[in-house]
Amino acid sequence: MDVITEGCPLPVLAVTTHPIVASAMSAIDTEARGLTQLKAALMGALEGPFLATIEAIERVYASGGRVIVSGIGKSGIIGRKIAATLASTGTPALFVHASEASHGDLGMITDQDGVIVLSNSGETPELADLVAYAKRRQVPLIAITGSEASTLARVADIVLALPRHEEACPHGLAPTTSTTMQAALGDAIAVTLLKNRGFGPQDFKALHPGGKLGAQLCFVHEIMHGRDELPLIGPDAIMSEALVEMTSKRFGCVGVVGNAGALVGVITDGDLRRHMAPDLLSRTTASVMTRNPVTIAPRALASTALAVLNERKITSLFVVEGTCPIGIVHIHDLLRVGVK
Image (tube, rainbow, N blue to C red; front, top):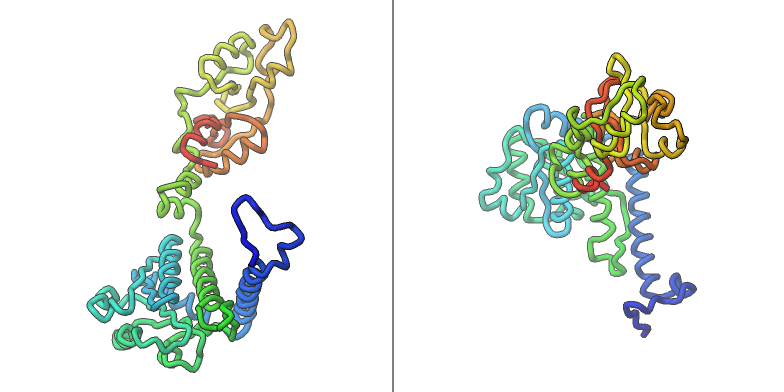
């Protein structure tokens, strides 16, 4: 048997034929076929039930209810992920473990809620109490199952039946392709709801304030330097005055504003090098400045500002409202808060 050790990669020519790699590729190929089958089903047999699912969840949302997701085993793990994805994209949701539901957690389900139950076989006995409770309370019940003929499918209000598929497990026993399809269908539901409601970056930020994602969703106005720190000068000023302003504010640039307070140009270190001459300090700022400078709006994402800075190969951006500068953001400010 070949032994793979760290620091001793397989020869390039052997990668596609090595039995370990071939086994991994086979598993991925099998699951990819399952997703292709799911896509085809959504365009055909699942189109009506999928639309009904979105409509049912939207009614639950409009009434102030939540989406309750449940399942057992691997389906339960995927259910937790679906509930988390729904909640993080603007659809209030929570996961209720079916076994715990039978011991008091049924009280988490209200008459305004909707229930999504995952079970590949549709015969999972632990789900019986939760399903019965949902039916008694006339709570919308959506089943994601691999068997349309199952008990769960027969009692559900809406059935999202996974197409017939091959598990990646060579014995056809371990849930692999089936759980991948469940997760993809859950993502499809969450993303569709997100788009339908116009859930945007500002909404996303409200639900993701922490970590790297929170930094990426930070807005320019939250980190920019305000009016008091702006390096600004008029178009008729001479360059010696502009250099004093530029040096005192330490952003490596100075903005040139007209009589109405509009930003009409910017002078950077690069402009100084391009116009280097004996008379530079006596020239007017208007003769040296770069006109129509790139700017950014205060409500733009900080990640957008970083992308502009990188693309233009500059270090600072003036923040404008209309045409008037209200702030400035430096690349160091973006890196300091974790924007990448």
